[in-house]
Image (cartoon, rainbow, N blue to C red; front, side):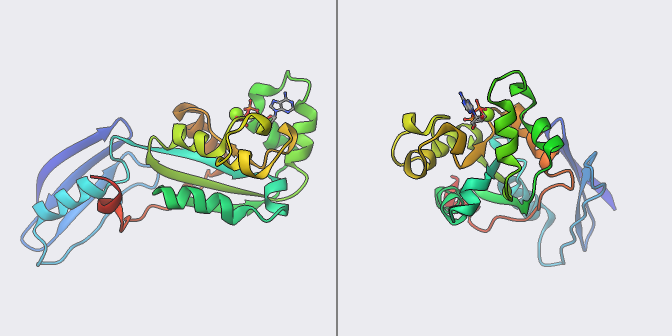
Length: 210
Ligand code: DAT
Ligand code: MG
């Protein structure tokens, strides 16, 4: 077996491609899960697989991930499907999802940057008042676009057509959370999904991205 090439997508993702007459292996180096290996049969030439991998890779340079959370009021009001629909129909990929109760400590960590605000205690109580639905969505500029889909913090200032603009009135019952920057998204995804997200091939990639 010999090394075909080494592809560096960003500082977190280095892929080494090995091949021989029979198989092509893609090894992800430095990932938390260790070696990720995929095996392909005789009929697929390694170079075809490499091109396919580059085109469909979820570590494509323009791809981002954001942390989206349906808050307890959104869950109780039956708005889970509305949130998923808006992100899914736009062409973003769902990478992780779970429902859970939130502990006070976890809510305080999530909103740590707001700890000095007078509404902080009420915000934490609200976040712990029922289950939330936690999600990771992926796509080109999904952080910024996700914020547009969600709308302004104060629902009364949110445009109709945004989730907050369509489904709520009060800032303290604004249905949904979305990361506000790529860095905060990375931090929040780590906080809510320490187990990692679901890595899979996106069948519609070439119909959504050129
Ligand atoms: P966003 O959720 O749009 O990112 P944020 O991060 O500034 O807004 O605040 C987090 C949450 O805190 C927000 O969704 C609702 C609550 N909040 C913000 N400002 C508030 C205020 N002035 N009074 C009451 N709750 C507020
Ligand atoms: Mg925020």
